[in-house]
Image (cartoon, rainbow over all chains, first blue to last red; front, side):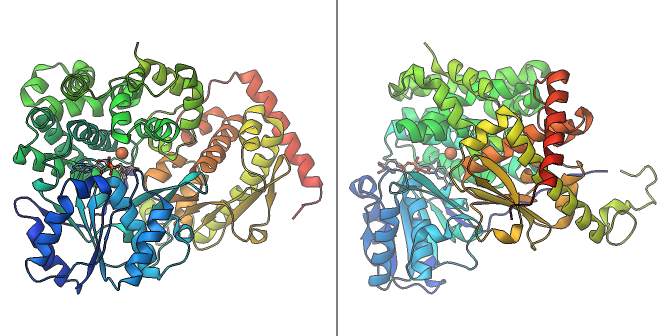
Length: 396
Length: 190
Ligand SMILES: NC(=O)c1ccc[n+]([C@@H]2O[C@H](COP(=O)([O-])OP(=O)(O)OC[C@H]3O[C@@H](n4cnc5c(N)ncnc54)[C@H](O)[C@@H]3O)[C@@H](O)[C@H]2O)c1
Ligand SMILES: [Fe+2]
């Protein structure tokens, strides 16, 4: 009997491409909002991106509430509380997040508080602990990586509790995701490369981990194809609007893929070195991706081999014997890492991050096994396995 | 696939045709949950690998595994150094909950037709609570199953069968079952 089963959901309206921001007034109006609050961070405001969004709204006679720009990297509970208080005091009726994953995740958690009217945000943490819809939420990503604009997840650093608080609920998915190439044109090369490799990792892990299904596969493949084609050209020519849009679309598609087929060991290791040493999430994923794929070969050879088609194109795929496709696919990912390293210095190995003492590898291995994402990895991971991958990823 | 396309596969509709009824599935899953909690209690006292993970759980940690509608359920709490099976009703708000959406899904796992990671991947089973604790409990449950189940059944429940020698396995299994019997004759602490 066929025992296959899967679930797939993505109710987010995509508004993508040339002059996409100018659709925001319509999206607000049709959701009954007259006073949206804007959530962002200092870097994004300094890049002039919030101004562009505000002008697109006010030029049509719309109003904008306060701009909350106090979001730190990886978010914080304090920012969630302060932002929600500002929302409630100023009588706003919707949230627009303009920023990367840190901003979008913070705005999601703020929206819980804004809807519930305050209280302790930790009360709603965890899995499916929201029971009703939240206020209209429009996500305008300014990095092309996390996919937070289409996911049901928010992760908030909670310095008081010394941990990361995790929220998962379908109600956290934005109502609208606006992908406009103007938002990523000035993204610095290093962040462009790191966030694109985060998206690449989302797609590759969605395609190779246990919950893969026909729909998540379709999104993952489309994302991988775009990132393989456009990452290096965009790093060489950062103001290529077409390439920027392709990467933004790829990040959203990778987000749809991994929110329906969760990630595995690459993310477990990346979460751990992110928490222990503050290594950027995308840079960390980029380091581990090829080493983890090699580790997963016994279970995923066929799937990884299929990826060669999207990583290298039909000719290379057809020209490579079936039994060598998986290795060729991994080699292609290594090539992308080399190119990104040559152009903008994206670290290729753990030693190149300059942040990690080699004698900590055992501790990293141990902590990684406590990350929930290892459950979805196609190959069972023991402490010795994790340590072996870390040692390979160390480099020389 | 049925060999004869005219025969509808009744496993697809347990309520409508043959195959265990939901009532029987519930009784079976309830018995297995009872057994799992007792076996894990015994294994955590006997096996050094499991003990190490349980030691690293916070003081007063508790968890439950249940079907979303409420029953069947199992509950365990860390008391001192031990992990003990307790009455599910005795836990006000467990720190960690493993939840099956439907009794049929619990039955699939408890009858070794679907592995735990597969049940997670198929959105039949979910965790609410601290992931680091959840991973320690899951590792312990996996190891316990590898020890007490015959290998041909354990491989259906686990992603990978651990490299453990038959002598070591049988020795630990005997001690776990022995401990289980001793625990049963002690007064239930809940
Ligand atoms: N919710 C999810 O599904 C999900 C998935 C993956 C990661 N995340 C989270 O996302 C966070 C990382 O997000 P990120 O990688 O997008 O980085 P980020 O949001 O932390 O931004 C990194 C830096 O880039 C700057 N920046 C952003 N856009 C810019 C632009 N267009 N021009 C100039 N500077 C710009 C920001 O000011 C910031 O200093 C992590 O906290 C991670 O946990 C969430
Ligand atoms: Fe990620």
